Length: 284
Image 1 (cartoon, rainbow, N blue to C red):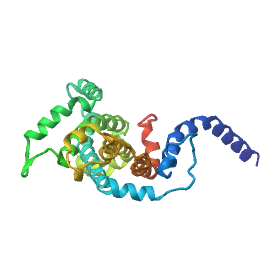
Image 2: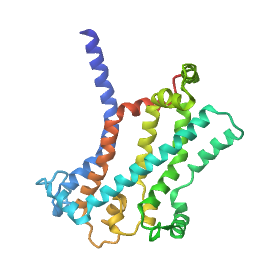
Image 3: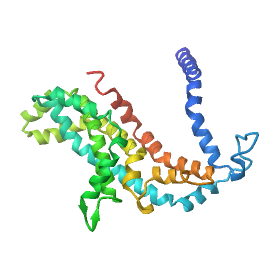
Image 4: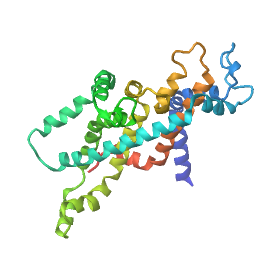
C-alpha cells in the first residue's frame, strides 16, 4: 500500500508539472472543435463565447456536401498510402545496403542524404510541373494525375526514410543473419525471416512520418493537381478560405477536425511501435 501511494503521489506531481504544456498543446484543438460545432452567427460575436449556445453537429454534414470532402478524403488516403508504400519499398534495400555493406563514398552518400532534407519542396515545384507536362501518360501528360504526386512525394521522402532505417538497421546484430546462413538460409531468406521482423518498429515509425509528410504536403499537390475531382484535403480546405469574400469558418474548422482524424487514429493504433522505434538503437 505504501508503494502504491508513493506511485500515485509521483504520478500526480508529474501530471501537475505537465498540465501547463498539456493546456498549451490542446488549446488550439479545443478552439477548433468548439468552432466546428457553433452556429454560424456565433463564430464572430463580442464578447466572445467559448461554448456555443447549441451544439450544431449538422455543420459537419453541411461541410461534407458543400466541399466534396469525401472525394478529397479518398484522394488524400490514396496518395498518402501509395507514396508511403513506394518510399518504404525503395528505402529498405538502400538502408540495408548502407548498414551492412562497406563501399567507397559511403560517408559522402550519407551526407548527401542529409543535405537533401534542407531543400523545401516549394523550391522545386516549377521544375516538377514542367517535368510532369513533358512526360506523356495515357492520352495526355502527368499534370492533374495522382501518379505524378505519388512519385514526387515518394522521391522527397526516400532520403529521410533511408536515413532513419539505416540508423536502426545498423543496431541489429549481424550474428543473427550469420546464424541463419549456417542453418541453410540464403541471404534473401535470412533478410525476410530474421532481419525484417526485428526491424518492424523502425519501418513502422518511418512509415508514420512518411505518411504524415505526404498527408500534410500542400505546395506540390497544389501545383500539379487542377481538377476538383483529384484534389486532396490540404487543397480542398485551403479553397474554403482562399479567394472568398465570406469565409464560413465553422465549415473550415469542421473540415480541419475531420482531416486530423486519420493521423490521430494512425498514431493511436501504432503507438507501441512509435515508442520502440523512436529510440532507434539508443540501447544496443
